Amino acid sequence: MIERSSMRNWKFHLSSIVLLLPSLITAQTPTQAIALEQEGRLAEAAEAWRGVTRKNPGDAAAFASLGVVLSKEQKYNEAAQAYKKALALNPKLPIQLNLGLAEFKQGHFADAITPFNKVLTQDPNNLQARTLLGLSFYGVKKFVDAANHLQIASQAQPDNAELRHVLAQSCLWAKQYDCAQEQFRQILQKEPDSAAAHLLLGQALDGLDRTPEAITEFETAARSNPKEPNVHFGLGYLYWKSQRYDEAKNEFQAELALDSKNGQAMAYLGDIEFKHNNLENAVSLLEKAIRLKNDVRIAYIDLGRIYSQQKKYPEAVKVLQRAIASDPQQSDAHYRLANVYKAMGNTAKAQEEFAKVRELQESPQEDMVRKMTSSPPALNQP
Image (cartoon, rainbow, N blue to C red):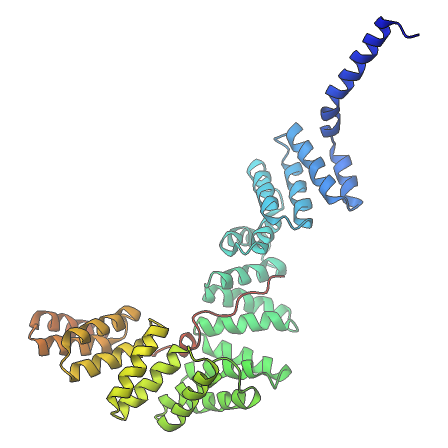
Protein backbone atom coordinates (compact mmCIF):
# COMPACT_ATOMS: atom_id res chain seq x y z
CA MET A 1 0.00 0.00 0.00
CA ILE A 2 1.36 3.41 -1.08
CA GLU A 3 1.86 5.85 1.73
CA ARG A 4 0.05 9.17 1.48
CA SER A 5 3.30 11.14 1.63
CA SER A 6 4.70 9.18 -1.34
CA MET A 7 1.53 9.74 -3.31
CA ARG A 8 1.72 13.47 -2.61
CA ASN A 9 5.32 13.52 -3.83
CA TRP A 10 4.40 11.56 -6.96
CA LYS A 11 1.57 14.00 -7.78
CA PHE A 12 3.95 16.92 -7.24
CA HIS A 13 6.50 15.51 -9.70
CA LEU A 14 3.80 14.77 -12.29
CA SER A 15 2.41 18.32 -12.10
CA SER A 16 5.91 19.71 -12.46
CA ILE A 17 6.46 17.66 -15.62
CA VAL A 18 3.17 18.88 -17.07
CA LEU A 19 4.10 22.48 -16.33
CA LEU A 20 7.51 22.03 -17.95
CA LEU A 21 6.15 20.28 -21.08
CA PRO A 22 5.48 23.46 -23.22
CA SER A 23 9.00 24.74 -22.59
CA LEU A 24 10.45 21.35 -23.51
CA ILE A 25 8.48 21.30 -26.77
CA THR A 26 9.55 24.79 -27.82
CA ALA A 27 13.18 24.43 -26.78
CA GLN A 28 14.19 23.53 -30.31
CA THR A 29 17.62 24.03 -31.85
CA PRO A 30 18.82 24.92 -35.35
CA THR A 31 20.08 21.34 -35.69
CA GLN A 32 16.60 19.97 -35.02
CA ALA A 33 15.00 22.46 -37.43
CA ILE A 34 17.45 21.57 -40.21
CA ALA A 35 16.85 17.84 -39.64
CA LEU A 36 13.07 18.30 -39.88
CA GLU A 37 13.45 20.31 -43.09
CA GLN A 38 15.67 17.64 -44.63
CA GLU A 39 13.05 15.01 -43.80
CA GLY A 40 10.45 17.09 -45.62
CA ARG A 41 8.51 17.86 -42.45
CA LEU A 42 8.18 21.51 -43.38
CA ALA A 43 5.43 22.57 -40.99
CA GLU A 44 7.36 21.12 -38.06
CA ALA A 45 10.59 22.66 -39.35
CA ALA A 46 8.92 26.07 -39.55
CA GLU A 47 7.68 25.74 -36.00
CA ALA A 48 11.15 24.68 -34.90
CA TRP A 49 12.70 27.78 -36.49
CA ARG A 50 10.03 29.91 -34.81
CA GLY A 51 11.09 28.37 -31.53
CA VAL A 52 14.70 29.32 -32.25
CA THR A 53 13.72 32.91 -33.08
CA ARG A 54 11.64 33.18 -29.91
CA LYS A 55 14.63 32.02 -27.87
CA ASN A 56 17.07 34.22 -29.82
CA PRO A 57 15.14 37.17 -31.33
CA GLY A 58 18.37 38.70 -32.62
CA ASP A 59 19.33 35.61 -34.67
CA ALA A 60 19.14 36.92 -38.26
CA ALA A 61 20.14 33.55 -39.75
CA ALA A 62 17.26 31.83 -37.96
CA PHE A 63 14.74 34.28 -39.44
CA ALA A 64 16.30 33.73 -42.88
CA SER A 65 16.03 29.95 -42.47
CA LEU A 66 12.42 30.32 -41.37
CA GLY A 67 11.77 32.30 -44.56
CA VAL A 68 13.26 29.52 -46.68
CA VAL A 69 11.02 26.87 -45.10
CA LEU A 70 7.92 29.07 -45.41
CA SER A 71 8.73 29.66 -49.09
CA LYS A 72 8.93 25.90 -49.62
CA GLU A 73 5.45 25.72 -48.06
CA GLN A 74 4.37 28.45 -50.51
CA LYS A 75 3.48 30.71 -47.61
CA TYR A 76 5.05 33.64 -49.41
CA ASN A 77 3.61 36.46 -47.31
CA GLU A 78 4.96 34.95 -44.08
CA ALA A 79 8.24 34.15 -45.82
CA ALA A 80 8.66 37.76 -46.96
CA GLN A 81 8.09 38.98 -43.41
CA ALA A 82 10.72 36.55 -42.11
CA TYR A 83 13.24 37.67 -44.75
CA LYS A 84 12.60 41.35 -43.93
CA LYS A 85 13.18 40.66 -40.23
CA ALA A 86 16.42 38.86 -41.04
CA LEU A 87 17.64 41.74 -43.22
CA ALA A 88 16.70 44.29 -40.59
CA LEU A 89 18.99 42.40 -38.19
CA ASN A 90 21.74 41.79 -40.75
CA PRO A 91 21.49 43.70 -44.09
CA LYS A 92 24.46 41.76 -45.47
CA LEU A 93 22.67 38.40 -45.50
CA PRO A 94 22.56 37.05 -49.10
CA ILE A 95 18.76 36.67 -49.16
CA GLN A 96 17.65 39.65 -51.28
CA LEU A 97 16.85 37.26 -54.13
CA ASN A 98 14.73 35.15 -51.76
CA LEU A 99 12.83 38.24 -50.61
CA GLY A 100 12.27 39.44 -54.16
CA LEU A 101 10.99 36.05 -55.24
CA ALA A 102 8.62 35.82 -52.26
CA GLU A 103 7.14 39.21 -53.20
CA PHE A 104 7.03 38.30 -56.89
CA LYS A 105 5.17 35.07 -56.17
CA GLN A 106 2.46 37.11 -54.45
CA GLY A 107 2.14 39.43 -57.44
CA HIS A 108 3.71 42.25 -55.41
CA PHE A 109 5.81 43.35 -58.38
CA ALA A 110 6.57 46.84 -57.08
CA ASP A 111 7.89 45.38 -53.80
CA ALA A 112 10.03 42.86 -55.69
CA ILE A 113 11.93 45.48 -57.71
CA THR A 114 14.14 46.82 -54.89
CA PRO A 115 15.56 43.46 -53.72
CA PHE A 116 16.18 42.29 -57.30
CA ASN A 117 17.97 45.57 -58.01
CA LYS A 118 20.17 45.03 -54.95
CA VAL A 119 21.13 41.57 -56.20
CA LEU A 120 22.13 42.98 -59.58
CA THR A 121 24.14 45.77 -57.97
CA GLN A 122 26.25 43.10 -56.28
CA ASP A 123 26.24 40.68 -59.21
CA PRO A 124 25.29 42.13 -62.64
CA ASN A 125 25.59 38.65 -64.17
CA ASN A 126 22.86 37.10 -62.03
CA LEU A 127 20.53 35.95 -64.79
CA GLN A 128 17.69 34.90 -62.47
CA ALA A 129 17.59 38.32 -60.80
CA ARG A 130 17.81 40.07 -64.19
CA THR A 131 14.90 38.06 -65.59
CA LEU A 132 12.73 38.51 -62.51
CA LEU A 133 13.49 42.23 -62.38
CA GLY A 134 12.43 42.62 -66.01
CA LEU A 135 9.24 40.68 -65.34
CA SER A 136 8.56 42.81 -62.26
CA PHE A 137 8.89 46.01 -64.29
CA TYR A 138 6.48 44.50 -66.82
CA GLY A 139 4.08 43.72 -63.99
CA VAL A 140 4.01 47.38 -62.90
CA LYS A 141 3.75 48.55 -66.53
CA LYS A 142 7.18 50.18 -66.68
CA PHE A 143 7.72 48.81 -70.16
CA VAL A 144 10.93 50.66 -71.08
CA ASP A 145 12.69 49.28 -67.99
CA ALA A 146 11.17 45.85 -68.62
CA ALA A 147 12.43 45.79 -72.20
CA ASN A 148 15.94 46.87 -71.18
CA HIS A 149 16.34 44.00 -68.70
CA LEU A 150 14.45 41.36 -70.67
CA GLN A 151 16.56 41.94 -73.79
CA ILE A 152 19.66 41.00 -71.81
CA ALA A 153 17.89 38.02 -70.24
CA SER A 154 16.50 36.83 -73.57
CA GLN A 155 19.90 36.96 -75.26
CA ALA A 156 21.18 34.59 -72.59
CA GLN A 157 18.11 32.31 -72.97
CA PRO A 158 17.34 32.32 -76.72
CA ASP A 159 15.14 29.23 -76.50
CA ASN A 160 12.90 30.62 -73.74
CA ALA A 161 9.76 31.25 -75.80
CA GLU A 162 7.69 32.62 -72.91
CA LEU A 163 10.38 35.16 -72.05
CA ARG A 164 10.56 36.27 -75.68
CA HIS A 165 6.80 36.82 -75.72
CA VAL A 166 6.99 39.09 -72.66
CA LEU A 167 9.97 40.95 -74.16
CA ALA A 168 8.05 41.47 -77.41
CA GLN A 169 5.05 42.84 -75.53
CA SER A 170 7.31 45.10 -73.46
CA CYS A 171 8.88 46.54 -76.60
CA LEU A 172 5.49 47.04 -78.19
CA TRP A 173 4.05 48.88 -75.17
CA ALA A 174 7.25 50.91 -74.80
CA LYS A 175 6.76 52.01 -78.44
CA GLN A 176 10.12 50.43 -79.31
CA TYR A 177 8.67 49.14 -82.54
CA ASP A 178 11.95 47.95 -84.14
CA CYS A 179 12.59 45.76 -81.08
CA ALA A 180 8.99 44.49 -81.10
CA GLN A 181 9.13 43.71 -84.81
CA GLU A 182 12.34 41.70 -84.42
CA GLN A 183 10.96 39.71 -81.48
CA PHE A 184 7.66 38.88 -83.17
CA ARG A 185 9.46 37.80 -86.35
CA GLN A 186 11.54 35.38 -84.30
CA ILE A 187 8.39 34.10 -82.59
CA LEU A 188 6.79 33.52 -86.00
CA GLN A 189 9.79 31.50 -87.16
CA LYS A 190 8.85 28.93 -84.51
CA GLU A 191 5.08 29.55 -84.54
CA PRO A 192 4.26 30.41 -88.18
CA ASP A 193 0.51 29.79 -87.73
CA SER A 194 0.14 31.93 -84.61
CA ALA A 195 -2.63 34.43 -85.29
CA ALA A 196 -1.73 36.35 -82.14
CA ALA A 197 1.90 36.75 -83.24
CA HIS A 198 0.87 37.98 -86.72
CA LEU A 199 -1.54 40.42 -85.08
CA LEU A 200 1.13 41.78 -82.74
CA LEU A 201 3.70 42.03 -85.53
CA GLY A 202 1.11 44.03 -87.45
CA GLN A 203 0.83 46.46 -84.54
CA ALA A 204 4.60 46.91 -84.47
CA LEU A 205 4.70 47.53 -88.22
CA ASP A 206 1.91 50.08 -87.92
CA GLY A 207 3.94 51.84 -85.22
CA LEU A 208 6.76 52.08 -87.78
CA ASP A 209 4.30 53.66 -90.30
CA ARG A 210 4.51 50.57 -92.48
CA THR A 211 0.74 50.29 -92.80
CA PRO A 212 0.57 48.10 -95.97
CA GLU A 213 2.80 45.48 -94.31
CA ALA A 214 0.75 45.77 -91.13
CA ILE A 215 -2.41 45.08 -93.15
CA THR A 216 -0.80 41.94 -94.59
CA GLU A 217 -0.04 40.64 -91.10
CA PHE A 218 -3.58 41.33 -89.88
CA GLU A 219 -5.07 39.68 -92.96
CA THR A 220 -2.89 36.62 -92.28
CA ALA A 221 -4.02 36.58 -88.65
CA ALA A 222 -7.69 36.85 -89.66
CA ARG A 223 -7.34 33.92 -92.08
CA SER A 224 -5.46 31.85 -89.51
CA ASN A 225 -8.01 32.47 -86.74
CA PRO A 226 -11.10 34.51 -87.68
CA LYS A 227 -12.20 34.46 -84.03
CA GLU A 228 -8.97 35.91 -82.62
CA PRO A 229 -10.03 38.77 -80.29
CA ASN A 230 -9.65 42.20 -81.90
CA VAL A 231 -8.24 40.87 -85.17
CA HIS A 232 -11.16 42.26 -87.18
CA PHE A 233 -11.11 45.56 -85.31
CA GLY A 234 -7.37 45.93 -85.93
CA LEU A 235 -7.72 45.10 -89.62
CA GLY A 236 -10.68 47.44 -89.89
CA TYR A 237 -8.70 50.22 -88.24
CA LEU A 238 -5.84 49.79 -90.72
CA TYR A 239 -8.29 49.86 -93.64
CA TRP A 240 -9.85 52.97 -92.10
CA LYS A 241 -6.43 54.64 -91.86
CA SER A 242 -5.92 53.82 -95.53
CA GLN A 243 -9.33 55.34 -96.36
CA ARG A 244 -10.65 51.95 -97.48
CA TYR A 245 -13.91 52.61 -95.69
CA ASP A 246 -16.10 49.88 -97.20
CA GLU A 247 -13.58 47.20 -96.26
CA ALA A 248 -13.16 48.78 -92.84
CA LYS A 249 -16.92 48.71 -92.28
CA ASN A 250 -17.06 44.98 -93.04
CA GLU A 251 -14.30 44.28 -90.52
CA PHE A 252 -15.85 46.40 -87.76
CA GLN A 253 -19.14 44.59 -88.29
CA ALA A 254 -17.31 41.26 -88.15
CA GLU A 255 -15.75 42.27 -84.82
CA LEU A 256 -19.12 43.30 -83.42
CA ALA A 257 -20.59 39.97 -84.53
CA LEU A 258 -18.02 38.32 -82.24
CA ASP A 259 -18.17 40.95 -79.48
CA SER A 260 -21.27 43.15 -79.49
CA LYS A 261 -19.80 45.29 -76.68
CA ASN A 262 -16.68 46.39 -78.55
CA GLY A 263 -16.97 50.16 -78.14
CA GLN A 264 -14.02 50.91 -80.40
CA ALA A 265 -15.50 49.01 -83.34
CA MET A 266 -18.86 50.69 -82.74
CA ALA A 267 -17.22 54.14 -82.70
CA TYR A 268 -15.37 53.62 -85.97
CA LEU A 269 -18.53 52.35 -87.62
CA GLY A 270 -20.15 55.57 -86.47
CA ASP A 271 -17.27 57.57 -87.92
CA ILE A 272 -17.71 55.88 -91.30
CA GLU A 273 -21.42 56.73 -91.23
CA PHE A 274 -20.45 60.32 -90.43
CA LYS A 275 -18.02 60.40 -93.32
CA HIS A 276 -20.86 59.19 -95.58
CA ASN A 277 -23.06 61.99 -94.15
CA ASN A 278 -25.50 59.53 -92.58
CA LEU A 279 -25.80 61.70 -89.49
CA GLU A 280 -28.70 59.94 -87.80
CA ASN A 281 -26.99 56.55 -88.00
CA ALA A 282 -23.71 58.13 -87.00
CA VAL A 283 -25.10 59.72 -83.84
CA SER A 284 -26.84 56.49 -82.84
CA LEU A 285 -23.64 54.45 -83.22
CA LEU A 286 -21.38 57.03 -81.60
CA GLU A 287 -23.60 57.51 -78.58
CA LYS A 288 -23.87 53.76 -78.16
CA ALA A 289 -20.07 53.51 -78.41
CA ILE A 290 -19.47 55.86 -75.49
CA ARG A 291 -22.04 53.99 -73.40
CA LEU A 292 -20.03 50.84 -74.03
CA LYS A 293 -16.63 52.48 -73.52
CA ASN A 294 -16.51 55.95 -72.06
CA ASP A 295 -13.03 56.87 -73.31
CA VAL A 296 -13.41 56.31 -77.07
CA ARG A 297 -11.92 59.56 -78.26
CA ILE A 298 -13.05 59.47 -81.88
CA ALA A 299 -16.68 59.15 -80.77
CA TYR A 300 -16.46 62.38 -78.77
CA ILE A 301 -14.69 64.20 -81.63
CA ASP A 302 -17.31 63.15 -84.18
CA LEU A 303 -20.22 63.96 -81.88
CA GLY A 304 -18.66 67.38 -81.27
CA ARG A 305 -18.52 68.01 -85.00
CA ILE A 306 -22.10 66.84 -85.56
CA TYR A 307 -23.53 68.84 -82.64
CA SER A 308 -21.62 71.88 -83.86
CA GLN A 309 -23.11 71.50 -87.35
CA GLN A 310 -26.53 71.25 -85.74
CA LYS A 311 -25.73 74.37 -83.62
CA LYS A 312 -26.10 72.35 -80.41
CA TYR A 313 -23.16 74.24 -78.95
CA PRO A 314 -23.44 73.30 -75.25
CA GLU A 315 -23.59 69.62 -76.21
CA ALA A 316 -20.63 70.12 -78.55
CA VAL A 317 -18.59 71.76 -75.79
CA LYS A 318 -19.32 68.89 -73.41
CA VAL A 319 -18.23 66.08 -75.73
CA LEU A 320 -15.16 67.94 -77.00
CA GLN A 321 -14.03 68.49 -73.43
CA ARG A 322 -14.34 64.73 -72.91
CA ALA A 323 -12.21 64.19 -76.03
CA ILE A 324 -9.54 66.50 -74.60
CA ALA A 325 -9.65 64.72 -71.24
CA SER A 326 -9.02 61.37 -72.95
CA ASP A 327 -5.84 62.71 -74.61
CA PRO A 328 -4.82 66.33 -73.89
CA GLN A 329 -1.86 66.10 -76.29
CA GLN A 330 -4.02 65.84 -79.40
CA SER A 331 -4.56 69.28 -80.92
CA ASP A 332 -7.64 68.56 -83.05
CA ALA A 333 -10.11 68.56 -80.15
CA HIS A 334 -8.74 71.89 -78.91
CA TYR A 335 -9.10 73.33 -82.43
CA ARG A 336 -12.72 72.19 -82.79
CA LEU A 337 -13.58 73.40 -79.30
CA ALA A 338 -12.07 76.80 -80.13
CA ASN A 339 -14.33 77.07 -83.16
CA VAL A 340 -17.39 76.13 -81.09
CA TYR A 341 -16.56 78.85 -78.56
CA LYS A 342 -16.06 81.29 -81.44
CA ALA A 343 -19.49 80.40 -82.86
CA MET A 344 -20.97 80.93 -79.40
CA GLY A 345 -19.38 84.38 -79.23
CA ASN A 346 -17.04 83.43 -76.37
CA THR A 347 -13.90 85.02 -77.78
CA ALA A 348 -11.78 84.66 -74.65
CA LYS A 349 -12.23 80.90 -74.38
CA ALA A 350 -11.78 80.52 -78.14
CA GLN A 351 -8.42 82.29 -77.93
CA GLU A 352 -7.37 80.04 -75.04
CA GLU A 353 -8.06 76.94 -77.10
CA PHE A 354 -6.35 78.32 -80.21
CA ALA A 355 -3.31 79.08 -78.03
CA LYS A 356 -3.25 75.43 -76.90
CA VAL A 357 -3.37 74.34 -80.53
CA ARG A 358 -0.28 76.45 -81.26
CA GLU A 359 1.49 75.03 -78.20
CA LEU A 360 0.80 71.46 -79.22
CA GLN A 361 1.67 72.11 -82.87
CA GLU A 362 1.88 68.67 -84.45
CA SER A 363 -0.25 66.04 -82.72
CA PRO A 364 1.45 62.74 -81.87
CA GLN A 365 0.30 59.68 -83.76
CA GLU A 366 -2.53 57.81 -82.07
CA ASP A 367 -1.33 54.53 -80.60
CA MET A 368 -2.94 51.49 -82.23
CA VAL A 369 -1.70 49.20 -79.45
CA ARG A 370 -3.79 50.98 -76.82
CA LYS A 371 -6.80 51.04 -79.13
CA MET A 372 -6.64 47.27 -79.34
CA THR A 373 -6.53 46.69 -75.57
CA SER A 374 -6.14 48.69 -72.39
CA SER A 375 -3.28 46.55 -71.03
CA PRO A 376 -0.91 43.78 -72.14
CA PRO A 377 -1.36 40.14 -71.11
CA ALA A 378 -0.79 39.38 -67.44
CA LEU A 379 2.32 37.51 -66.36
CA ASN A 380 2.41 33.75 -65.93
CA GLN A 381 4.46 33.65 -62.74
CA PRO A 382 7.23 31.05 -62.50
